[in-house]
Amino acid sequence: MKGAMRLKLFLLDNLIWVILAVFFLYNALFTDSFLKPENLVNIFYHSSVLSMLVLGQGIILLTGNIDLSIESTLAFAPAIAMLLSMKWIPGGLNPYVAILATLGVGALIGLMNGALVSRLGINSFILTLSVLIILRGLTLFLVPYSISRLGPVYGFLGSARIGEIPVAVILMLAAFLLMSVVLRSTPFGRHLLATGGNPTAAYVAGVPTKKMILLAFMMSGILAAVAGLLAAGRQDAVNNSMGKDMVMFTFAGAILGGCSLDGGKGTALGMLGGALLLGTISNALTLMGINVFILYAVYGFLIFVAVLLDRLRVKLRERIFFRENLRRLAAAEAATRAS
Image 1 (spheres, rainbow, N blue to C red):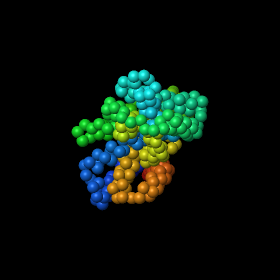
Image 2: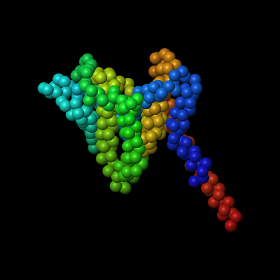
Image 3: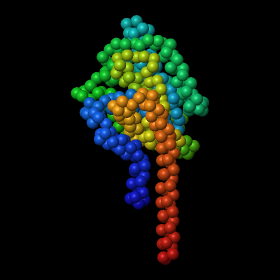
Image 4: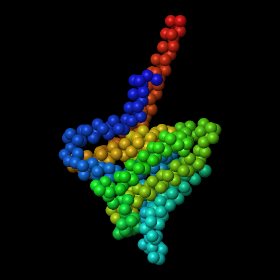
């Protein structure tokens, strides 16, 4: 493979970081207060909740499935933990147990979704759409008003800082770094990609595809619960609107970051880039004083761009390999004639 082709493929695979760098440079030059250290920290901090959801959605997309329920899991998991702590159990729960309960609820929701998709073959879009509505309805019923004053331990991840750096940012970066190592350097990561890339071939090759789908949904549920912990800790309260309308942005972030709706493609660092791009755009438009309704339209446009970029990336990759094959054939014919 020629150096030029390697460069093209590298830029194509890391397009999100090129876009993010260009957008960052533009705002650094033309947007007031954008480069202030506190604003840069703020971008990461306010991207942390969405980033956890983007990572969860990206893992599901790697298997060729979709999880619409994560935005409702974000609210439902901490709501159940807080109801157990403050109302349902006499004497309440130890705050550390409440954190584990939050993660456990997320894992159980993912387990249910994964089992129904992998074992019964239910379409993931329809299934998780119904779960999204069910969980949101239950959250509205169980938490008609906010549950506040959650305590310093339960709110630590969402509100605490180490120096000037929020703990939420450290947790976010650690999660993406860990997932990057898993996808690149472990059999689990390779099996996950193979499950979405070609499920039949992967199954014939010995990959436990059903188990991989099940585990992917569980990971998505746990990450949604972590996002719920961050959101609840940030506002020191659990309310029934947490995470509302965020699910479409999880697709935008994951697809902008290199995941494909066809499955089997994507990197954790690319997903991080997609989430940070969305956070940076939101921050920049807010600093510019853009009307909130225009802001909402911009978000919709970004989702459209993400889907368009997914198709464009596939077409460009096909064209690059097609031209490389033509070059090799021409070189082989020239060598045959010369001999």
